[in-house]
Length: 125
Image (cartoon, rainbow, N blue to C red; front, side, top):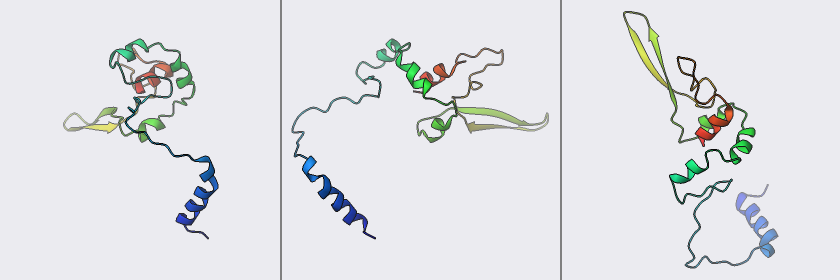
């Protein structure tokens, strides 16, 4: 079995003809963009303009609504608060939660500001 460095060298030699020298020189690096063309220039006005963008439709179609994305994302900070106990003694427990299920934003009066998966995906991104 070949070692990893030898495999890397073999791969390099297999593609060396396709590689070319390049230098960035003093050229400015373009601003980062997301997959559907949202740049970081003009923040925070741009998200307001893109609130009803058709791109959200294609993004939410790809979502299964399983909440797995929130448990692997290091920036997710949604939580739930539960109260346990009885009348004499209790404990309030705060736990990490996902904002992707439809019940997360369901309010006590029955109103849900994000009833559809489309709104939840848009909120998450």
